[in-house]
Amino acid sequence: MGAVRLHVNNAALQSRLRIPMLFAADVVHGDTTVFPVPLGEAASFEQELARRMARAAAREASAVGLDWTFAPMVDIARDARRWRGVEAAGEDVQLARLFSQPRVHGFQGGAGLAHPEAMAACHEHFAAHGAAEGGLDYNRVDVSERTLREVYFPRFQAAFAAGAVTTMAAFNELSGIPATANAWLLDGLLRQEWGYPGLVVSDFKADQELIAHGVAADERDAARLAFLAGVDISMESGLYLRHLPALVAAGEVPMAGLDAAVRRMLAFKAALGLFDDPFRRIRPARAQSSQRSRETLALAREAACKSVVLLRKL
Image 1: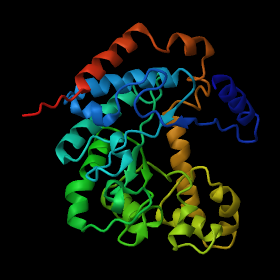
Image 2 (image 1 turned 90 degrees about the vertical axis):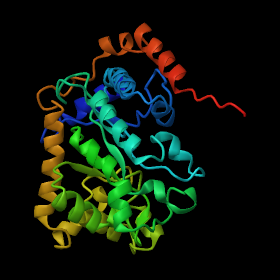
Image 3 (image 1 turned 60 degrees about the horizontal axis):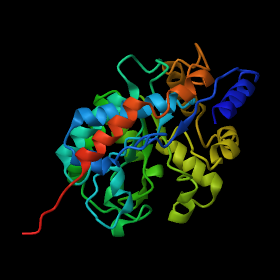
């Protein structure tokens, strides 16, 4: 994969504006070295262990060209039917909040995002994804604003306080409006009330899913709704690429809004050091030597032992 990223980045640098590429992936509980899932990690009750695991994962992933991970997942999981609950720290708000910050610190490191071994964190899924009815990813969420603020928002706020500069909008509906098209959530609360300056990325084709939710008439309308709500980056669907130029030309999306989203994207790439050295994390010589080191494997074994929960029948 490192060779592919090298080739793609070379192609980007030959374009008119010479803007470097940004590479991202789900590095949730390790990269080539597999660590316990985050639910098991939280069962250790050791925040420093969580930081060390995220740091080790970032060293491995950054060595093969990854700049950004879609982690940590900071959902509060209280429905045992929801299989993705293993990606979060469980049902307790305080424990989940305490584990948000060390994972962000671990992924991003302590030397700034431009460091070659730093990988930007993206906490997900904003918001209340863990409360979807029936344990389903795409279902509705019907909770009060008080519950949102007391249960589902604190872990996001903790991640922001730890220095996270990106977040991912959720798949689910919130009070009848999908998070990906929810202007109250992404603009009114996130940007205006909290003063969040960073990027918002959609989940996988979540803007396209607005059609299935019944709130968008077609792909063009879905792109318009997601962008106006505050989603800067459309993941995988291609809707922004296909429809944003025409939406701006028609006056349905303001140019100032597009400029602001592009500015946030460029600022993120600059913070990662990609304009200074587009290949800082694409180092074939470092890639192999950074994988599954003796120290990292020992850490994985330590984490596995500490994450085990034994039950005794009385």
